[in-house]
Amino acid sequence: MSESMSDVINEPTAEEARLGRQTDEGAQELRPRQHEVVMTGGVWPDDDETMIINMGPQHPSTHGVLRIMMELDGETVLQAKPVIGYLHTGMEKTGEQLTYVQGATNVTRMDYLNCLGNELVYALAVENLLDTEVPERAVWMRMMLVELQRMASHLLFQATNGMDIGALSMMIYGWREREQVLRLLEMITGLRMNHNFIRVGGLAADLPDGWQQATLDVCDNVEAGVAEYETLLCENPIWQERTQGVGVITTEQALALGATGPILRSTGFPWDLRKAQPYLAYDDVDFEVIYTGNGDVYDRFLIRLFEILESVKIVRQCVARMPGGDYRVQDRKITPPPRGRIDESMEALIHHFKLFTEGFKVPAGETYVAIESPRGEVGCYLVSDGTGKPVRLHVRGPSFYNLQSVEAMVPGSMVADAVAIISSVDPVMGEVDR
Amino acid sequence: MSDESPQGDADAAETVEEIAIADPVAAAVVEGFPGSVAVESHGQSVVYVDRGVLAEVTKRLRDAERFTQCTDVTAVDHAADVERVEIPGVVRERFEVVVNLLSHPRNARIRLICQVPEDDPTVPSVTPLFPGANFPEREAYDMFGITFDGHPDLARILMPDDWDGHPLRKDDPIARIPVTFKGDPAPR
Image 1 (tube, rainbow over the protein chains, first blue to last red):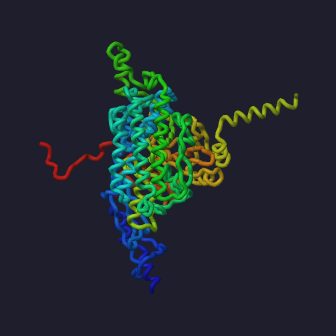
Image 2 (image 1 turned 45 degrees about the vertical axis):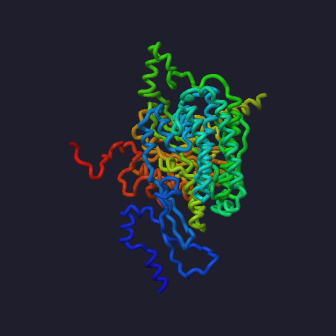
Image 3 (image 1 turned 135 degrees about the vertical axis):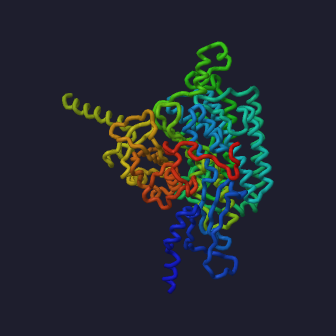
């Protein structure tokens, strides 16, 4: 009797299967699974009824429009499945319509917390296809800007992570320091976000007057801020109780699921592309790869906290050792002529006009360039057919891959812990959905 | 002296062979899977493999060559290419499926590319080997309509489930869908 009952329940009827295909919920269905869950601390009703609920897409803890389908047994999450696509705007399709000059404005909006990093990976990919080397000063300026961006991103993580877990004052502190970094970036690039500053062949402009002192001041303030967070959270028993041993993931799981960045490093695997496959001048500066061994939410928080200090270290070295020279290649086919030349030289005017109307042509070929973003490996797969627009502009957003690890980390934890786990992945939906 | 000269010639022939395929992993793939073509693209190791053996090559690389992570799976539509690089030994098709693998112990990357014809856009899935290929394969299916055989849950991921067409195909033009708003009065 019981066997035939379960057969009836497990096998969907033809009608159910048809409905499953037709409704837009059908393909994203979460089928209840049999799990062994040990529950303690109370007398639980002896039933195996589970509940499937949706968290998001509109939920303050989902960092945008992430939806997580969760199967619950009481307060325990049996399985979780991220459902994405709510922020899909076809940016890779848009990238095929834009010239290589315009492309930077597109990629910078994908991971909107790592704008300069996305511009950098795009610029490196195009320069790889062009076989162009940028001047020394451009390399160091790029490195400084990307590290400032990493500081801003990790500071924002400290703020939102604190908010998600319940340390509300942390949100204000994190935002306070991030604001200083953004003001510095505004002073250098002219914009707080989506800078479009790192361009193919170098940068858009040179550093402004007084940048050294402003940068060093921000470094000092951020360092003081991090010391405050450390006092506030690291030894805080409530914080530790809330984060330690929660959302544990092993190195094998992280590697298999394609997780990179702080998630991989929190499992005791010291992999950082800045050290392992150095780009820019990272082999020339002194910094440490931060990694821990527990693979839980607390470790991911710690790694991001101390990576801020490593970024401060790199930025200080950049300020001290910033080389002179040009901030972009003086190749009129790639970078525009100086503004002053346009008034006096017909050739400069033509170059300027051609560059900003039809852009430059890139030799046919394909390349994949990867750098370390605050969230892990951000890669750019670029295919050119010899014209002024790419055939394919694919950005490997680290959050897109890291989100898959939620499926491995959440089961067995409480609903409130699921919020902490999603927060510790630090997903940016802009680059997940692109 | 006379004994050494043929030896020297053989050495020279070997070095020429080694220069042709600088990456030992790529050379091993070409040796193990006839029909594969190894090239170097801007200093990166690329192997063009037959789509039928994509999963086997990936498995070999994972198990024997210690490629620990599948960093990226994506596809390319070459339908509208003005110019396409000719690779000797590779019959170019409309679609390409690109698998980027990373080996942490070797600190090396390799890229597998297979040609996928328009009339049968099917490749074997690498998700059973690398669970992390789940989302990117779903994305390639969603955007290009390429089916990944053996994928556990091949559903659309970014577009709505009832969407018609595959947006990143070159014959899926932009502004194909007229933008309409509910209750929008007709133009005056």
